[in-house]
Each structure stands twice: as C-alpha cells, then as structure tokens.
Image 1: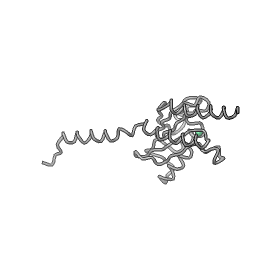
Image 2: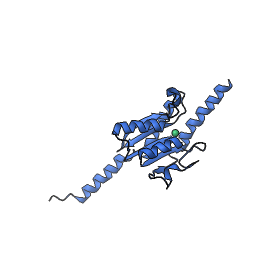
Image 3: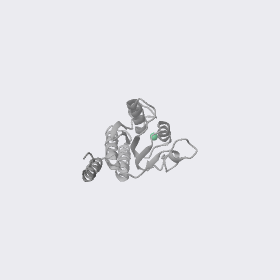
Image 4: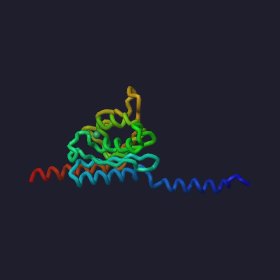
Length: 175
Ligand SMILES: [Zn+2]
C-alpha cells in the first residue's frame, strides 16, 4: 500500500525536468549579457559575468576597470570575490561561471584558484583568451585543477556588443 505508484513517480520527474528547462546555459548567459550591456552604458568595455550556485545567481558583475581605476577589475575577478564572500569560502565548489568573453590569463588564473568546476563563455578572444585562443590554462595537465569549459553560448550576441562598443569609440575618436 505504501509503494508509490510508478506512473505518479514518472509524472513527477517529468514536471521537475520542465521546471529546470528554462535554467539552461543560454538562460544564464542572457543574464551575463545584461551585465555587459550595463558596462557599455557606463563606458566600460562590455564584459559581464555571473556565478551560479545550486541554480541561484550568487554573483553578478561587469568589467569596471575605468570606474575603479583597477587593472584587475575584470568582470570575472569581481564575480569570484562576490561569490567567495557569499559562500564564505575561497573554494567555489558546485558553482558555474557564465561570462560573455573568453577569460584572459589573469581571470583564468583566478578561476583555477577558486576551484570553480565549470565555465561557460560566449565569444572567443583571439587577442587575450586563455582558455583556447592563446593559452589553454583551464585544461593544462601540469596544474592541479582543471575546469570543464563550454564555449560559444550566445557567441554572436556576446561578440556583437563588444564590436559595437569599439566601433562607437572609434567614431567618437574621429570627431
Ligand atoms: Zn580577465
């Protein structure tokens, strides 16, 4: 009598899958893109990053190098500090980072230090990228931590916001 009806159980799992569906990589990347947009509005190079822990955003940041006059104020660095503060731990276990641009060597280093297990990024950065473009820091067998990476999520939109920003800058410079 106490055995759950197998049909009912199946129905529940189906509902659970439906509820989780909106929280896809694209869903989270959209949140990071909104932050990149905010950066552009504040005349900062538009890169946005969020960190998700157990399906909740625990950190959201955009590049603030100009405002903070700080060369380390990349979106990823600020997000990592926020997340560590939120979890009260330097180890960002069970976290995923979503960032609109391929991380640079500094941010890839911080990602390794924070032990984040998964990074999803949008556009490639052929001039400074340290995941695949120039270096492959997140998957180097000589280091003691490696990180699962996924590239190309909303890559066109993530790249376009940067191209438009620099086009606008160039035009303003010519006036
Ligand atoms: Zn960086």
